[in-house]
Image (cartoon, rainbow, N blue to C red; front, side):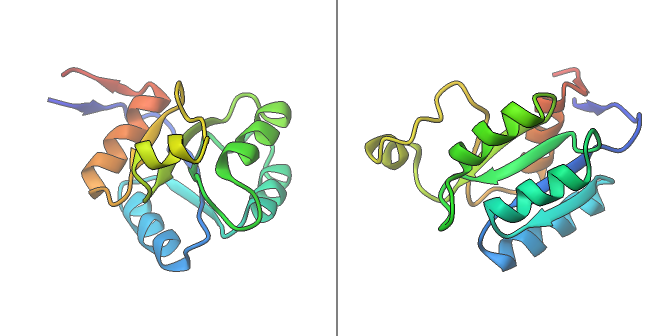
Length: 133
């Protein structure tokens, strides 16, 4: 059984270059009680983080985006906002990312497509707000 802690709602920044995915993930997360901010590029995500210092709990980052990879974006965010946790997501299999020399080992990762339950559970795990088995 999974028990979700009911303290203040977490704020999630969803960053993906596919608008339909951003809309879908946002609906899922809002339905689960999260506050959601969205960005369709790494540059937009940086602006949102700078406009909302201290209020974003977690970023859900696409690994491969046209303007800047999620890995590079996370490195920038970690310098300015070390408190923000991250989950990388990708439609590419983990092995393909390794072949492209994209290193996500040691980071939180979720494979697209994912179910709403899998996504929400993973977010709560990363936020450290899940208790039980």
